[in-house]
Length: 473
Image (cartoon, rainbow, N blue to C red; front, side, top):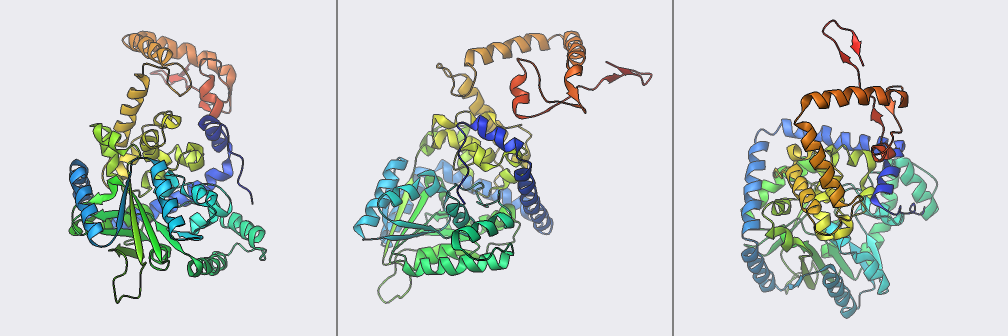
């Protein structure tokens, strides 16, 4: 089953997502389950809010001392026998990983779940170098078969139903169609097991990197991260610089909140502590281990006193589950490895100007801030990025010149000083829009408001009620 063609822009992508009622049904079902499970485990854990505050303090301290912690982490990893490579850009990270694969003679690569490798576009680079790459997280495996990127940070195939997956497996593997999850999982497990046994190189992401001990922590539910990091002879871990935390004792606080917020579990099934390649006399683990520490715009975020807070993110994906925009258009519409509210913050800095419009793709409702396990003030950062984009000296890369946007804001500011004029315009607008309304909604508005109804319906302005209870237009 081939992936659908990619629309030309975010605006076309979001319009297509907004029109896809079946997509919204799937997103609503999956997101609601996540949130129901989260509410249950949060309610039974009385220390949850205390752990949120403690975890935020740890991240705040880590980001404030990031340079020192990176040096300490590198020193400890190298002392454990790891090769550490600091990559300033995605190109440097890709080139290093491909060179390691070539130098070790790797032909078959297994990958645990990793958003950072999505960020650097690793799979195409390895495939162009003649290697076979197998995603081993079930959701990632499914979207890889469809030749499309993940739609969610935690649940890559959130946009698909079990019927969709059954049809995919029938087409790709020639097995009888079934939508029974247990049978589909068994089929995937059998094929992935063969991939693990044949792999020359394993790659995973990193949830936390402990500077004190030089230990990498990989958290997952399927065992694929453990298999990818231990079975192949060569293992590469890829992490952003923000993943470092100071002490081993800090990990427990994140374990208490991450699984609860991300998937509604008390704890993930597998919490892997990786301390380096196998030593003499050991039979398990890789004989060679590399750690790639990626910057790719994160230092720029660190230098911004408002934006640096986004580096606290522990990639739980909860902000996507509560976001009305994400739940309406889906992850692929963002056209970035990181969708949703947190993606709208980090993408412009990690993938460049092509994502400069994303901070505007938000209602600023604040639900993302309320659910964030480390209390990131996402709406504040989104407003900060909007201000930076609007203040650019050259025209912004989102539709509409900056000068026009600023002029419109100034006109509205002058008008807002006169409440009577606002009320009068509201009455005129309600009367003018009445002919366009059908069943209480306006599907097409005239310019300059046509951009709104291009991708959503507008509720017809309701008449005011007088003190006597009669409707007034």
